[in-house]
Length: 313
Image 1 (cartoon, rainbow, N blue to C red):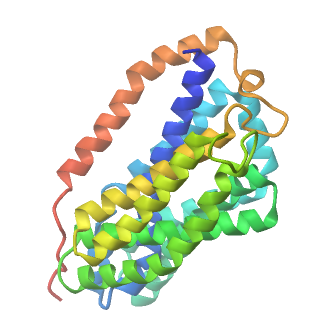
Image 2 (image 1 turned 90 degrees about the vertical axis):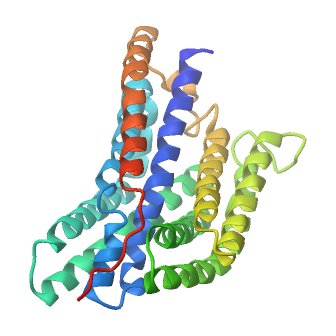
C-alpha cells in the first residue's frame, strides 16, 4: 500500500473515531436539560461523559494534525473554504468545555443555568456544523449542507440518548429510552435522505454496479440506525449503543470513500500529499503513538464502565 493511501485511511479512521466518540458527548450535552428533573439527576446525566469528554476531543486534534502533516494542501483548502463554520465549531467546543468545567465549581442556580445553556449550545453547534461542512464538501449545495447538518444533529441526539440509557439507572434511564425512540422517528428518514446521497457524489454515480462499496456502507449505516432504534425499544441498551456507533462509523466510511481520491474539488490525494520522506517519518511516529491513543481510550472507558445513579438530595 502506498503511503498516501495509508495516511488517507488513517485520517479517515481518526475522523470517524472523533464522530463516534464525540457524537454521544454532543448528544448528552444537548439532552441533559431534557432528561433531568433535579440537580442530582443533572449531575447524573453529565457524569456519564465527565471522565471522557476531553479525551474524546483528542481525536479531533489528532485528525487535524495528521491532515496538516500528511496532506497540507487538503488541510489548507478545507480550513480556508469552511473558515467560518470551523471557527464556530471551535467556539462551540470552547463554550461547552467551559460550561462542563465551571458547572461543578459554581454554587448559585443562575450560574449553573448559564453553564447548562453553554453545554447544550456548545454541543449542538458542532453536531450540526460538522455534518453541514462534509455534506457541502460532497455536494457544494446549501440544501445538502442543511440536510447533512440536520442528520448529523439527530444522529448525535440518538447516540447520546442511547448512551445515557446505557450508563444510568432509574428515571433518567427511562427518559433516555423514550427520548431515543422520539428522536429515532426523525433520524431514520433524515438518514435515508442523507446517506442515499453519498454514493452519488464525486466520481461515483448512484448505481449499485458502479459504486458497490459506497452503497454497501450507506445501506448498512441505515440498517444499523434502524437496529439502534429497535434495540432501544426492546431495552437492549448495550447492543443499541453498538448499533448507533456502527451507524456513525459506517457513515464515516461512506463519506471518506466518496472523497477518495479527490478530497477537494480539483485536488487529488497525490497532489495534496507531503513528500515521501515526510510520510515515512509520520508512519513511524504513527506506529508508536496511535496504539497508545487507542489503548488509553479503551482503558479509560473500561475503568468508568459502571452505571451511574442519582445522588440523594
